Image (cartoon, rainbow, N blue to C red; front, side, top):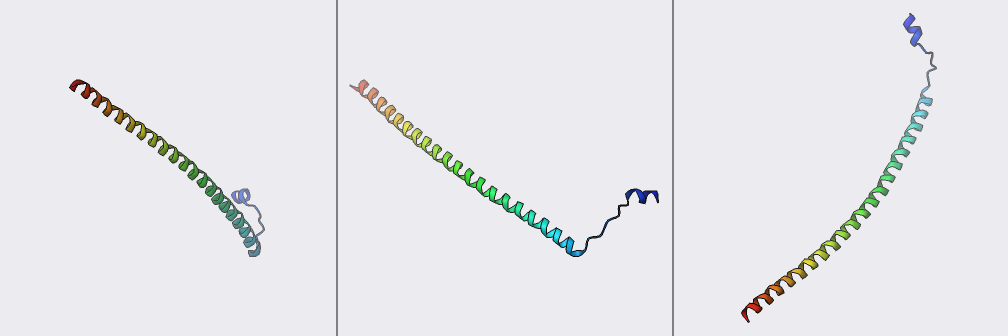
Length: 90
């Protein structure tokens, strides 16, 4: 009996209407949090996609510049070797 006295708390049982109202309120709060979270995630994804696009454009520009540079170096090397060969044959 001592144990029951320690843990016993008289509670007024809620009727079904009060329980339903409380659960509906909690569900509305939860739905709002989920909707807000998805909206925030969509905004973040758009920002990340924009950043990825910018990085891709930068990389393509860099690769194009390098390809042109290496192409120019190749032409210069070929012309240089041709010049050397022509000097030795003349």
